[in-house]
Image (cartoon, rainbow, N blue to C red):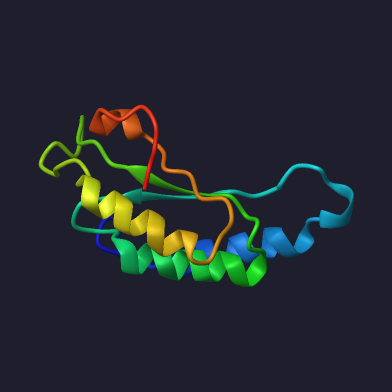
Length: 115
C-alpha cells in the first residue's frame, strides 16, 4: 500500500487462482515462484512471514525470493535494505517454506548467503 497506493489483495488472489489451475501431478517444474522487494522501511520480517505463510498454505515447495533493495533511478531517497533485515526476513520465510533464496545479494557486496 505504501509504495503502490493500492492493496496487494488482488496479487494474492491471482497467485492462488494460478496455483489452483496448475496440474502439479504432471509437472516437473514449479509453475509459480514468488518474490518480495525488501524496501528498508516497507517490507520486513512480519511481511515476509505473512507472505510465506500464504504460500505455505498452498504448497511449502513454492520457491520464494526476498529481494535486496538498492536505491537507484526513481527511488534514490531510500536506503538499500540493511543486512540484518535481510537475515530476519530469510529466517521468517524459512520457517514456512522449503525453498527460500535471497536475491540481489551483490547489492550488499555479498556473493553467497549464509545465515
